[in-house]
Image (cartoon, rainbow, N blue to C red; front, side, top):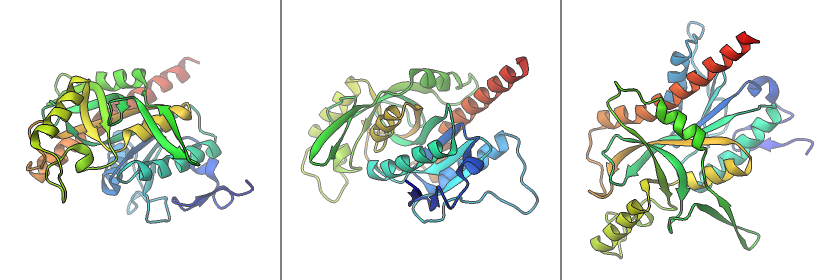
Length: 289
């Protein structure tokens, strides 16, 4: 196209110099919440040792109210909203953005929260693959009246390297497990506390236990779409989510907000360490040349 408008970001190929703005990006980190991704951007600013001029702060690059985007050196921090449709829209446009900017060897991350299965709350689950409601590693989408399917395996290399960034002194565990990705927060995840509930406690527990027995460590609402689309684009990707509750023990969160906030930082810390490690390795390679 003569002009490709990335509508939900408020950017375009003719209205913006995308190579100049984004050409050095090596890491795209996304999460559901606008506030969480702004917090992550400021955290990366600190971790990368970058200082903004006095009186200035990070600015949201998007000019719409759908998504927020912050750039800190080679790191792009963007929210994806709740659920796979919102994730899909963001990924279509960010993949095109990276292409137009001429970016290479970019690693994508979803950093988020989830419900655990048999996991101590506060545990970080690094996804090896995302599975659907039948525990199959596929993402399905009806296109022009036909159901299409794509695999949802994530980078084993990235998962293992992120796990290795969990240090002996950390007060949490990081495990590699499958992630159950659903289309709904309440009934789709077997919750008993929604506006509707047409199944029993036993039905719920049998299903969640079956998921756990099939290697599922956590439940959320975006990873199948994320894994499938990054796979299609041949992009290395990882999903790193902290568990806020053990769904085998209950449905509602009663943990204090300050504790939840502390737990949320754990996934961000691991991804930040991975990024710093990779940047250091790249710097050393350049020095040897």
